[in-house]
Length: 192
Image (cartoon, rainbow, N blue to C red):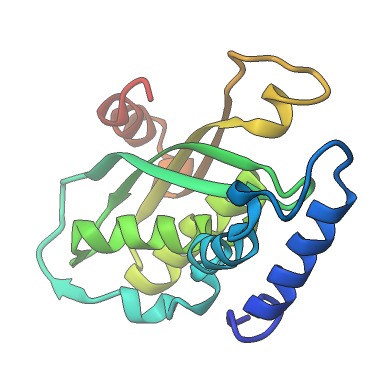
């Protein structure tokens, strides 16, 4: 889905204008709010840019002898929006893979995380999407994706738990079937 579709700037601006009109006790014509619809439209374009990312195009593959090594990229910061409340959740992704003669540039792994974070998400699906794409396009012997995030919908409403964190892990291939390899990957990832 591209920005030109569902997220047209004119639609967002209209929605924000209507929302501001509905808030009692404030004025949508107040100086600080006059440009809010435009600012929100620009922000949404940035926040949801992941829908227009060419995922297969991220996988610039290098043929390398990847035998007997685990590649780990830790603490990739991300911000996303929960599809249930349109509230942000932020955190860190850590990814380990066991190459099978192919590697990918580290920045491309970070871009993959950002591409999925910049969509309406749930944390569980985001981890699966990242793991599945690495398995599909890089064809490693295995992959581990761990996401740790704080969710505004938990911090600011309902439970109002300020210090809660959600951790999800996705394990594929050799890391699922070989407990020694899995333990090594988790040790390398560390306590995220």
